[in-house]
Image (cartoon, rainbow, N blue to C red; front, top):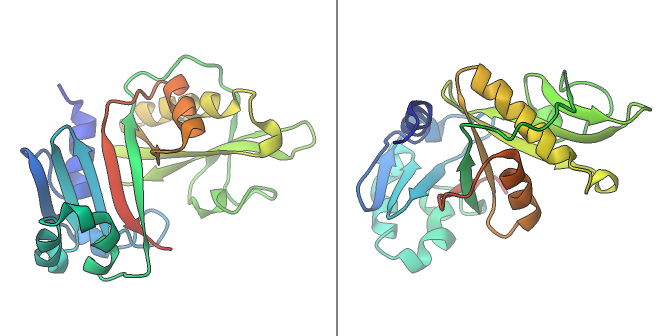
Length: 219
């Protein structure tokens, strides 16, 4: 049975969940409003088994429904179909966790405006989870994308010199526990070809259940 928090997150984030077999194009006003980082996400899809819900702005539903009849062209043509022909499509594994791996807490929650953090962490408007060395230099960090009150997506990054030490998996598990404590479900998305990110997710307690997410993002 699907966790209620995940069900509510997907229904809120996409505009409909669940759906029957096939691709279901749904209109959502959220696709025409800025996302967590102030930028648009004009198309987001989640696939579970034989069912896909593809969320687009309401005025683009007809064009995208016509497009899904040609599945071999879908990802290539989707940006133009939602009005952003120069944007890119991300094609990801979609994971979530009810029970993060009980790894040790290794990070501290600090403001995203803290000096020395990488630019991608400065996009967040709330505290980020960071590991720094004894000289205060950034080694690894996690930010939380609060898509809605029910689902929070984790993003992690580690500097090359600190990789292979297990920092990323510990941070992801630690952040996931915080999200669960806050009453939401932690999610984790990564490119289907990113083996390193897949290993981090699995080690932190985010198994690959065969779900997929794709969407249109700014280039």
